[in-house]
Image (cartoon, rainbow, N blue to C red; front, side, top):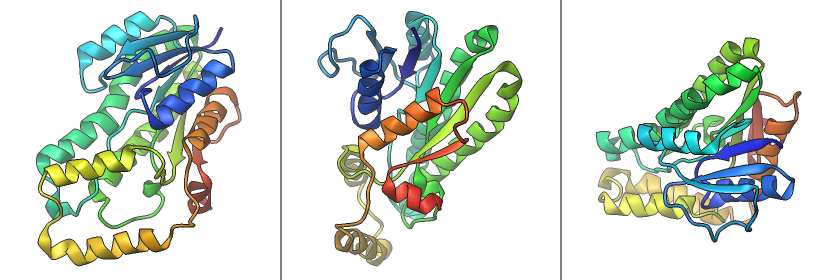
Length: 249
């Protein structure tokens, strides 16, 4: 039976991905920073583990509990929206700790077993904001662009060992809690710098007027991860959601 470890599986893309793989007969190890057993259907193929991707001890414990892992999905991530001047060094470091360093640490933790079997798939969930520059997303985009580069180079390094590495690029997903969480963090840290308020207003107005624009659903991302995990011919970069597909051309 194939097994998959998914980080950030308590909500949004991660939860949808865990559900999809359970439905399709896989053994699912659902990594959650605050583990809950009531979010996914009860199954003898489901294992919920405590996993904080910024904590090396937590990563080691989760991988040890998981046993053999055929597919790793680095989905856990945090959002941020502000100008460069409105982004503290602490916030920037936090973004990279979760969005870039965390995935790399998970890769390092599972690669020895994958190399030993000469098989495995690693799927890094990035963002379609890396396909087109957007205002107020400089720091977040930087953390995801770094993840893209990490994925692309590691794909070359790992090909001789039979290990595939893929990037899933979701679009904007207003139905998830991702944006609300980012906005709450912005308010907690003092909001936007006053000189940039006209820029913020222009961005918000554009989103409000684009109410019928195509967006990404969590199930779109789950299906993209499924493609990355199960299709040997899957491309390195897989856009997820109608808006992401349009951006990718």
